[in-house]
Image (cartoon, rainbow, N blue to C red; front, side):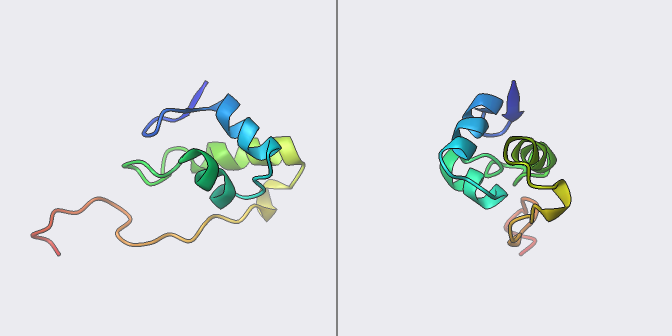
Length: 80
């Protein structure tokens, strides 16, 4: 099942990252690039958190989102 459409990362790849030590969304990102595409995780962040909670037993409320960095959306250069 495709989780991150921008980077074409599957659920199996995310589970493998968790099994090799990822314990946060940032850890999953570093290992798989999930959430690093054009949408910057806006479409897959919740799915990543759900898989992380399911695989590790960490409550969903305790999974902290990574720090967002501007721009949160792609901007045209003339706007800057």
